[in-house]
Each structure stands twice: as C-alpha cells, then as structure tokens.
Amino acid sequence: MDAEQLWQEVLSQIKPNISQANFATWFNNTRIESIEDEGVIVAVPNSFAKEWLEQKYHKDILKILYSLDSNIKNISYTVVPVSATKKIQKKEEKKTDVLAEQLGFSELDVDKDTNLNPKYTFDNFITGPFNEMAYAASMAIIEEPGKSYNPLFIYGGVGLGKTHLIQATGNKIKEKFPDKKIKYIPAEKLISTIVNAIRNQNIEELKRRLREIDLLIVDDIQFIAGKDKTQEEFFHTFNSLYQKNKQIILSSDRHPNNIPAITERLKSRFEGGMIADINMPDFETRLAILKQKSEEKGVIIQEDILEFVANNIQKNIRELESALNRLVIYKKANKELLLEDAKKILKSIISPVMKVTSHKKIIDTITSFYDIQGGNMFTTSRKKEFSKPRQIAMYLIKKELKMSYSEIGRKFGGKDHTTVIHACQLVEKSYQEDEQTRQEIDLILQRIYSE
Ligand code: ADP
Ligand code: MG
Image (tube, rainbow, N blue to C red):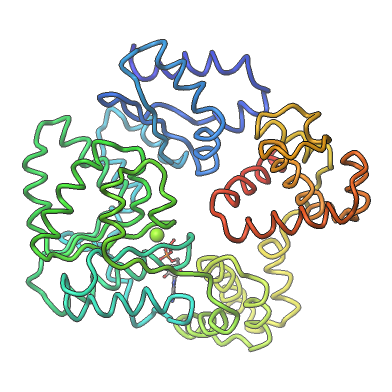
C-alpha cells in the first residue's frame, strides 16, 4: 500500500467513530508526508490539529496503521500549511522544491551561503527586560563564538523575536568573522535534509558538510521531537561541533524539558550550555517597539494611539507589528489618524469575534477531552482524573461565561461557592505555571469554539 492508500484507510476507519464535525475539524487536509523505517510522518494543516491528533487520536491512528503494516511502530506529526499541501499536490510531477518555497527559502534576499536573511539585524532589535538575558548571551557569543555559551538555547512563545535574534546574531558574526562558515537552518529543513540524505544514501556526505560549519543555528528545534533518525544524526553532529568549540545556537518554542520525545542525551546536550528565555514585553517596551517601528516606516503616529495599541495588544511582537501596519497604511492614505479611527481599524484584532458558548458545551467538551464519563463531573470524587477536569470546567465556565461562583456551584451538584473559587484559583495558577495544563486548556478552548 502506498502512503496515500494507507492514509485513506486510516481515515475511513476513523470516520464512522467520531462526529462529522470532529472529523472535519481535525482530519481535513491531513495526509502521510513520508514513510520512514519504523514510522510515518503525518502532515497536518496547523498546530492545533497537530496537538489534537497527538493527544486524542494518536493511539487509534497508530493501532490502525499497525494493523495495516506491522512495520509501523510510531507516528509523528508535522505542520504543513494547507497552501503548501495544495502546492505539493499540484506540483508533484514537476519536482519543484516546494519545501524550500514553503520554508521561505525562495525569499530573494536570503544569503545563499549562510541562509541568513540580512533584514534581521541588531539595529532594528529592541531589548528590554523581556529578552535581556537572551540578548546578553547572544552578545557574549558574538564576542567569542564557541567559547562562552555552547550551545545557546533560546526559547519563548511565537512572535517574540527568536528568529530575529538568532539571525541577527548570525549576521553579526558573519560581519565580524567573514571567514567563518555559518549556517542557519530551520529544524524542519534540517529534518527533511537528513531524511532525504538517508534515503539517497549520502548521509556521510551530509555529515561531513555539517561538521565543517563554525556556527550552526537551528531554528525551532522543537520540531525534532519524535524524529528519531534526525535526533540520532543531529546528536553526532552536535558532539563533533561541540568538541571542536564550534558555536551552536538553537531556538525553540519551549524549554527542553517540555519538548516531548527527545532522547535524554540530546536533552542534556541542550541543557549543557546556556538556556535563555524570551517573554512577552511589558507595556513600556511594547510602546518603545511601536515607536521605533513607526519611525522606521517614516510615519508619525500620535502617542495616545500608540499607547492604545500597546495596552490592547499583548500577545506578541508580530501582532504589534501587524496592528501598526494597518495604522500606517491608513495614515498614509488619509493623512490624518485619530484615536477613534485607530479603534475602528483595530477592532477585529483587539476584540475577538463575539464568542458564544454554554456551560453544557464546556462540560461536554471537557468530558470528551479527558475521556471520562459525564457523571463524574458532578461527583465529589477527589481522584485527580475526575477532579482536574471538574476544576477546569468550573474555571472555564467562570472565565468564558462570567457566571457567579454560587451559580457554578449549583451546576456542579450543589457545591459551595468557596469550593468553586478554590478550583478557579488552582487552575489559574497552573495555567500560568504549568506548560502542560496551559496547552490542554488552550486546546479545550479551541475545541469549544470550533464547532
Ligand atoms: P519568533 O521566531 O519568536 O516566532 P520572530 O523573530 O519571527 O519571532 O519575530 C516576529 C516579528 O517581530 C518579526 O517581524 C521581528 O522582526 C519582530 N521582532 C521580534 N522581536 C523584536 C524586537 N525585540 N525588536 C524589534 N522587532 C522584533
Ligand atoms: Mg521563529
């Protein structure tokens, strides 16, 4: 059976067992990306589908695949945006380098040698308490590559400047040490390069080339999770570079401890140098970023508007930028931009589309997410497998529906309002502090509003 048939078979077995809406939400635009020695790589259209398949359907999918082909022992999921999937389907015969396209390699300004994009520099990089550690570590590396922190591992949420920082560092080192061999590689590209090299039996050649590098920068290394072959090869490359005091810089959307399915030895390598995080910038820094970026664009936007944006857009720098872009375009076209205009222009970014849900929907989603019987939501059982979903349900009903604590207590079989308050505080705390819980709750929310 080829990949296509294999996946069709999986889909046809899953479909009758889940709701149509679920099927459409989580399985549309999925396919088998490639089949490797003992596993398959499944392409999914976005990271929610990825996490959802990993968390909810993984066992079922594996069971079916294994029943069809007992060589298949594991599955990993990789995000391939739909546009890229369509392109692949369209161009398959033409053998264009779709992957390169999809990874942004066809971007014209990218340096052919290093893969670095010269647009990322320190001149347009703002520092503040949110990124000062990562920034300072990068500066130390620019001073003496390979000597201070090796590897430098930078992690933080999307849109907070990881790619910008590591590319700027690469560009700076290139400027300072023009003879050094520098390579910037997004992990996804590294993975596909290694997989192809294994398939084409030129892995030795690839290894040799990787080992000649003086500065290796791998972006979004979290994608290596579950990719055993790549981890294996990367581990050896890593050691060889490390032993020769060659600098390695890695970025990830999370701490090495929270990357699932990486081997212990690789994790301890990641942790063996310097780990620095990047957080969300505070209000002052957000304002500074907006000021600098509007200056770069040659447009002056009044202070109260910038403050409005800095106050209301707190997710990441990329969103700040896109909000600013909208304002800049408006201002250029209309000459005048008032706070009232700005509020209108940014309305759709700032106040999310009206959300509607019900406590029943929240409870149902959570019981199915954690695979528990609905009735267990309303018992007094203290077993964690029931108490956790129950507490999350209370928390989300409070948060999303603004119901009173006593009312929520009544919905959960007449619990006291103090019990509900306690539950909400507990969940809020773990939402803040525990990556796993945060991911679960975000997935649940996505699910609640996706149907
Ligand atoms: P990440 O890799 O963490 O997802 P990026 O590096 O792609 O984030 O940053 C998102 C956008 O925000 C980019 O356009 C980048 O230039 C800009 N940006 C990020 N951090 C900063 C910063 N400290 N100063 C100025 N611009 C920044
Ligand atoms: Mg990035």
